[in-house]
Length: 193
Image (cartoon, rainbow, N blue to C red; front, top):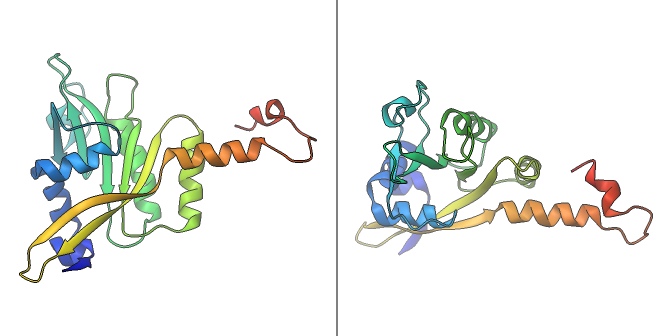
């Protein structure tokens, strides 16, 4: 048994996003990151938003969207995920923001819980995601899939490892607001938050 990357395990990004949508247990592992258990949730794969949401005319095709049924005729989007091979890249970091504004949910005109699935991310990428999370608009999490391939060729995505979360942004924000010299106070820093 060995740990493998998305491409070796699934043949590419598209096949992996399809697996997330079609395999309930795999999709549930991703949903747990945002505190959902998978009940009453359907995960779509690269489907134009307008085909799922009757209130949308958007042709955007996010990799995965988690749709929850709240007892109304309209399903509400609760999560958008973008998958990429290798390192987190600028295209996916910005594309997921645009997708979040094309999918209306029950709280606002955008989806707050966003998940970037990649195989690695630089400190610069994490700092950019921190900046976005501090705007109090999104909850963006970066995860790495833990995929294993058995000797017989069977592939299993065991789980998703969170390598950066909105809590990391909160911790950095608190670190910025404290000072050992006493020259500034948390109130001073509020205007920059």
